[in-house]
Length: 111
Ligand code: HEC
Image (cartoon, protein in one colour):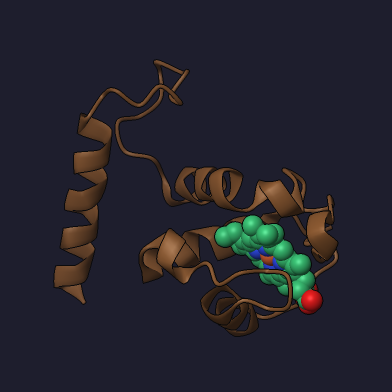
């Protein structure tokens, strides 16, 4: 467990040290994103095409995430296996930590 965390942070460091990431517009941004920031950017990249920035878009019949009542466990299952028009997302999210960051982020979209 400690080892996977260490590897994950090395991975994050590797990502941020590249410096060529043109999506980073804010020069004041911390070199390592907080879990909340990481969750928000993973969501923006992988989920907004169907769910929209606020979770309400409903593209391709996507559920309104601001109204979703699912538990972390239920969300995780959908991210792993997909559901109807929603494809599985676990490969894109790469690892368990990223999945948790995204789950925490979508729960902030709830009203
Ligand atoms: C290709 C479009 C598409 C993308 C991309 C997508 N989703 Fe979905 N999502 C859907 C659809 C469609 C549903 C409704 C599935 C159903 O119940 O029929 C859904 C449902 C969900 C639900 C269940 C909501 C509920 O209360 O039932 C969650 C949670 C969710 N998506 C999270 C995500 C996250 C997080 C991402 C990004 C990692 C993502 N989705 C990316 C289309 C998408």
